[in-house]
Length: 275
Image (cartoon, rainbow, N blue to C red; front, side, top):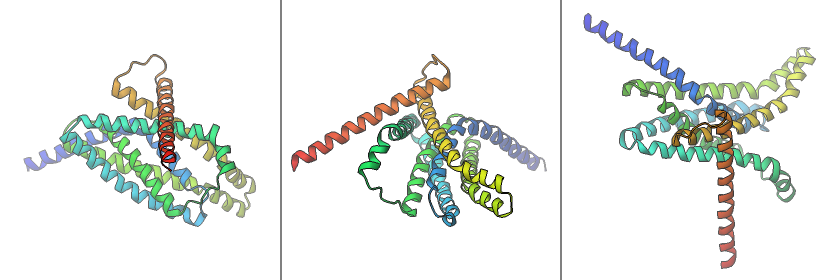
């Protein structure tokens, strides 16, 4: 009887530790989750309304697989070669900074030119889902790595916390995506019920809301990317922490864009000279 009570007490203590660590980990990764939300909400834009929820469901299932992969990978690296975690975080930070800066450059400098000289090939539903799952995998790895950096205690407690954080991240993100993509449908439903003003307000507000969400997602990418670099190199904060992370993320992102552009130009020049 005593051993059973001791076992139950250990389980209760473990669950309590998991709850506390989950709260901290979710707070630390919330900005990255908001970026994941913005990215995936944008993926469903422009598709047939009847296919919106099936697409969200497919990405959600892929996201759960991504969480299993990322949690297993993080735990394996921590056990085999913990130093590699910093390299994973560094590459992820550069990637997020690059994505954020690339979006800004496309928005302000390349969008009109691309539209004028290119015929945009429609992206199929399967391609959208695959692309969203690939992006989710990268963000899932970063979420798990950052979450792991906040954890302490036994291996069991940390593993359970990562599982809970991963599951909550997928449910919260894709649950909100499902709600967001159906807001305009709900608005049309309200119009049919006779509440024209409220219904049309919802429908008309969605393009602005999605645009704002895209901007928030871009800022989140730069904030998280810069924040990861600051954390890895233990940089001092000379200005406001968020402003410094944003500036570092933007500068690193622009450098990455410039380097990739230069490499692409050299590669194309090399191919042209051969022909």
